[in-house]
Amino acid sequence: MEKILYILKHNPWGVGGGCYASRSYLEAFTDICCNDYAIDLCLCEEYVASMASDTVQKYNVSGVNPRPAFSRYLSFLTGEMHRYNSKVRELLKKNKYAYVFFDHNSIAGTLVHAAKANGAKIITLHHNYEPEYYKDNVPNLLVLNLMLPHVVKAEKRAYIQSDYNIFLTEEDLVLFKKKYGDSRGKSAVIGSFEHKGVDIPPKIDLCGRLNDKIRIVVTGSLSNVQNNDGIRYLFKSLYKLIPEDCDLLLAGKNPTAEIVDMVKLYDKVTLIANPASMSGVIANADLYLCTTRLGGGIKIRIMDGLRLGLPVLTHKISSRGYTIFEKTKSLFVFTNEEEFKEKLIELIEKIRKGEINRETVRKLYQNHFSFNAGIDKLRLFLFHKPD
Image (cartoon, rainbow, N blue to C red; front, top):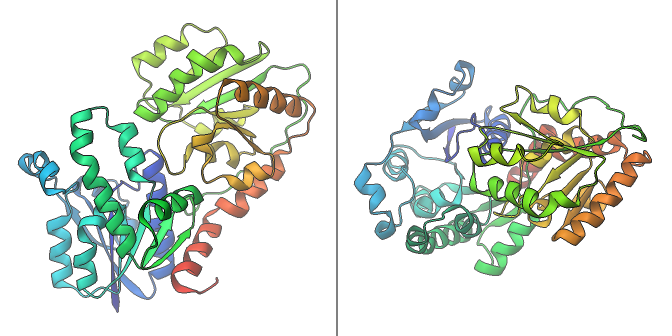
């Protein structure tokens, strides 16, 4: 039986957008290939403990220990931004692989040549345009300036050398072509999709709310740079534009002390920290709001609203990957305060008149973001075989 080497940067069983996408692709790729290939799974040692016993049995698992401190400190000289080099090169020497799947271009950038020498076909999943993400999430200017050239070099090499480049948004693919030119391989936007076994919620009716307040919900991790910037932007610039007859729900993991203190200043804002069920919170809302304006790639959290049929109001940066919903008037986009107010009033009016059909939004989501939709697109791109 031929073999595949699958290398993960994120923890597929962790929390966060990168983790969510990594799990979706790992599950889809495994379903496609498990009957014809043996899969060597290479991931951080600490992630192995997150694997269920039945998951472990699907793979030959190689856990990778953290790099020594001196190796991390020399990254600005060596260009190594991950711990996988030694382990992956060892696996490539010992085994012949039909495919090597890199779940992040920062890993592929330093290993793609070695994988090519093995004779394998290279598949790289690009989570975003990495320099954009790096600039928004590394506040230390010295570290940023030292590492950014390596980030760009690794990403370009991964893109140019891969046989298959997978993107989560059309915007990222366009940006790659503009910055790096054409890849030697094939490129496609597969997008994000649900995990295996996740059921799209059943129909939820949204009637006109003529007497009740409109409930707006904002979700996501409340302790990272991108999201916290969006929350500050919400309260400092946008909240004053929200009508009096609206309540705001803010829900997410591990809110910072800054966010907790901000919420206390507003009577119509409720903070739900570490909710047991995010779907339960969102299902009781009328409108999903995303104010994140930093970073690239797809903002997975917006899927939470669309999955339940909620209309979405989002900053332009966070609309990437959701074009189909913008075209069908279930997702509205703003870039400044004036547009925010205009789109919010329009959306509230539609909700009150009963013009937003949750079932239509939910079905559109199922057609484009279900696990089956994702696996079909991935199979067709890699193997030209429809289900």
